[in-house]
Length: 169
Image (tube, rainbow, N blue to C red; front, top):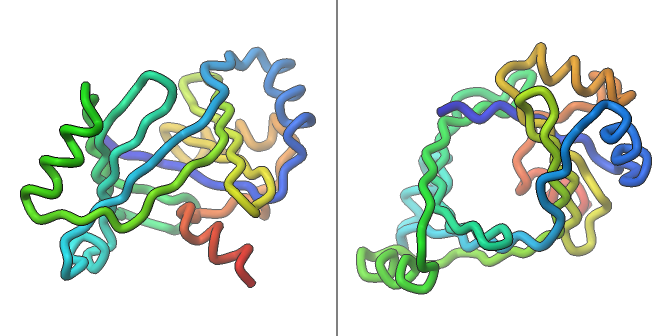
């Protein structure tokens, strides 16, 4: 499956949520997201620009593997994802096959659905609220961003790592 998304920095959370409500978006979650990122000791996954993580959002736990396709107008990744029942066992399996936990992250996330798209408002420690718009194509992303009053120049084809790097300046 392809993940096609952009980020919008320094948003006004209340304003965006008000606009989403007026557009008929459905709030699907509001809470903490925990992520554990894994790689081999030689960082083979990172060196291929791929990503492997275990994530927990509410009562939902899953593994995700991502490979980059493009970072032109949007961040486009091949995304393989499957649910898991037991995070602790999955972490043990990863360690038994030689993977190491390279990072553990937590963020606050409010998720909405609108016209077959996901709009997520994220708050990481020491970073202002930002928005992710994930849709089936760049035209759809542009349509949603315009409806939210966001200019195309604000759309960033960035990873979360790039958001962190932006604010470390």
